[in-house]
Image (cartoon, rainbow, N blue to C red; front, side):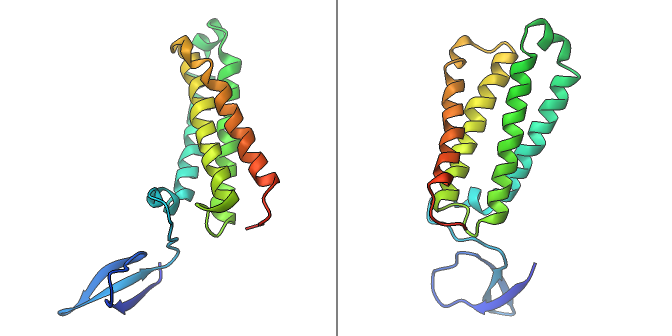
Length: 165
């Protein structure tokens, strides 16, 4: 990580870490920092990590369903919903990672909206299917389509976006 020492001049310290040389304090500019305008800036600064963790969780859940839970899921007739949840979870995690790597500011504009909608889709669609497959309450059933609509809305936002990156 490249660092550049700058003397402290005002209270705008976004994207900097404090360092000192003797009694003079400096700010260390952190390369790759993305300043964000919304309160969830910590999430967008680590968007690549969030997408990577989400993909890893999808793979773990897929393996868990294929091995440890297979008998239970087959007996309950929930193997196909589990597989669907894993597939959509993984596909949209990879799409989130692509946005984090491709977009200069993944938190704003059409890419930001698509990422947020896909994140909600993973939580609502895949999350409700995982819970239902494991015997969760029936009221989760109507939540699944809301997640599907979130996935669709994320893709539609990109279809009608004017900016490429």
